[in-house]
Length: 404
Image 1 (cartoon, rainbow, N blue to C red):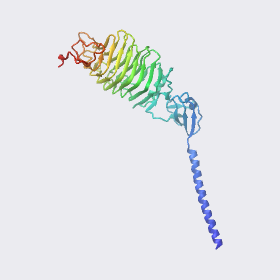
Image 2: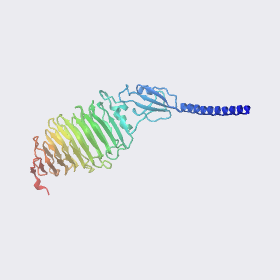
Image 3: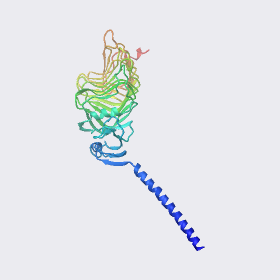
């Protein structure tokens, strides 16, 4: 009996030992598999160090402290894709300096980019043109945003938004938002026609919380042609030599009109002789004008000799609320030359207009505009033309009797 008990005890011990060994083996195999399947991690100081890494692993994760130096805003987390041959874009996709195949891919939302990721310094000394160009190019065609952190970004070439020709070819890019942090200054450092140019037809463009500084050597701050449902908000356009903001209708067939656009809290100023704060026009031959646009709490002030706050040509049915138009020649000029019958139907609501001017000929004339709540507390001159009618902020009507 004792022998049988020993045998049973021995068998039980052996069975338990086998179970323990099996469990250990399972966990050991799992540990090896986890080790084999784990992603190797690297930490580097900047983008150049990442690009020079020699990575033999199938996958790898790289933490980059900064684009140039740690903490400069251009760093992030990347993964190595040894099979990728995607085009390098200077911000979210980078090549290895030694390999034709394989890319470092930034872990990010490709629809929400940061200008610092593309090498912008924003220090007011270096040229950040390439960073703007690469960031806009990297956005998907349906659109996305580029955040512009606080700083001064020097540009030596025009920043082009959209790839249309404002007529026969619509832009494949749309829905582009350039969003400043409140103190983001884009400053022109070379002579050029425009600091920013929008080439439509396109829609859902937004420029917000930016200062566009022409630096007294660039003609126009922002030029926009053939756009729908777009906006500029909480921004400044300053120091232009010719025009601060140009709003244009495009040609046939894709550049049809400018409609449903909004401009809010926009400050446009220059002290250069002959400058124009905002210029409205279109393609009269194609019958594509600027219309159904609103401006709210905007200021267009040109203080140089012979300057104009707003120059209106082929424009119709736009509404302006609590805006200021100041120029040493005219606050607003209504110009019918080359577009007879326009401008037409512009409504000024609680606006300050320093003075009104008309440019027309015997065969090319402007139509009616109205002013409701015409400001009079800063020496504004009430229009003396029956086609410009309304009521002052003091309740005094002018030419109201001819309204039918």
